[in-house]
Image (cartoon, rainbow, N blue to C red; front, side):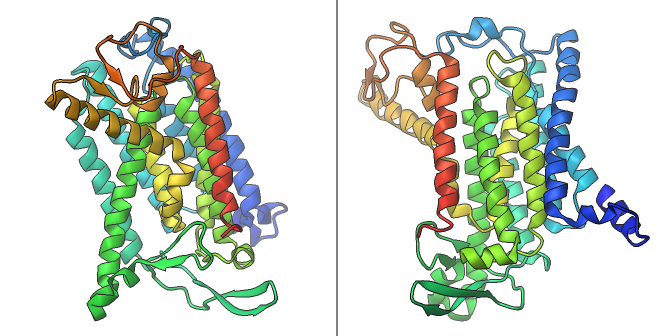
Amino acid sequence: MLYYIFRYLEQYGISGAGMWQYISFRGLLTLVLSLLISMWFGQYFIKWMKKRNISEAQRDESIDPYGVEKRGVPTMGGIIILVAIIIPCLLLGRLRNIYMLMMLATTLWLGGIGFMDDYIKLKIDKNGLKPIFKLAGQAILGLSIGLTLWLSPDAVIRENITISKKGDTETVIHKSEPVKSTITTIPFVKNNNLSYSNLFSFLGKYRTAAGWIFFVIMVTFVVMAVSNGSNLNDGMDGMCAGNSAIMGVALTILAYVSSHITLAGYLNIMFIPGSEELVIFMLAFVGALIGFMWYNAYPAQVFMGDTGSLAIGGIIAVTAIIIHKELLLPVICFVFVMESVSVLLQTNVAKIGNRRGQKWRVFKRAPIHDTFRIKPGQLSPDLKILFNWPNGCWLESKITTRFWIITILMAALAIVTLKIR
């Protein structure tokens, strides 16, 4: 809204109105505004929830040794994050931009599904929304995003091409005409562009259609996987919010270089016209999470609930997909991957053990962050644990901080892949 007002005023020579065309100015303003909204709105939201005694059900103390301390803490704090993202984007973003619209739709859709889950847990059934409905909602979003990128004339790229090489210096240009393409980026590979259509070259004239269908399936899988990984990571004070903010910073950098044709040429990556609005959105995302951390850091005054965690994972996934860096997500979202894999391993090994009359476990608890807060003697002595470490119980703040450090290292590695191939 403000972007269009000041661009209109620029025609009349209003001093300072021209600043709004710079991504750096709008981005930093968005970051600060989202942070302040999150902190300001957060205190009123917490007071409102406490006044109405709307808090998370008591946690299982056999899993969470600090569950007693968390009684009466309000949940659904993801609403704080959503408000702090949406308002700055509406004020400072270009609302005619296809990518901005896609990100706002992702936020509202998954935030809405998470809100329904949290509301059902509080008012109707402590188990919340049935998993099949959450998965269906995520799949619908993934299909919608994939089809939009396939069919929208505004979702285009300009492919990077190396035209000459002198010694160790390469000259990179981008194709003059933006095109629709199934090209994605393979990390750590020299010529790192891969077209999904090329995987179906044996289909002849149908390979492009097959490539797009595969792309839509891939998008759906990525959205579901990252959203669920984020949901699993939300189990400790500040854990998901901190990790996601770090991932958001990495994706902001990747979106910025992808939207800047000079930097894209220097780094030999594809140029994505219009993706500069992702920088605005992601800075709102980072600011909202940092502001939320004011209340969610240990000891938490509010929990984000599925309202926040499902939306956070979707935002991260869709951003990476738009800038064609979805294959880099296992690096950026390494912690989310660990959480998801730990649950899959734990569940399947337990099933195999049950069929053989044995109580097998890979970890003491899953998701993986729970295994670090099990006190000695809490587990049944007849359990056979393959990975029985650590021996003691770590403080929750230590577990969270160490997961942040891992995410910082992996985010740095993801950015380094722009040059190291």
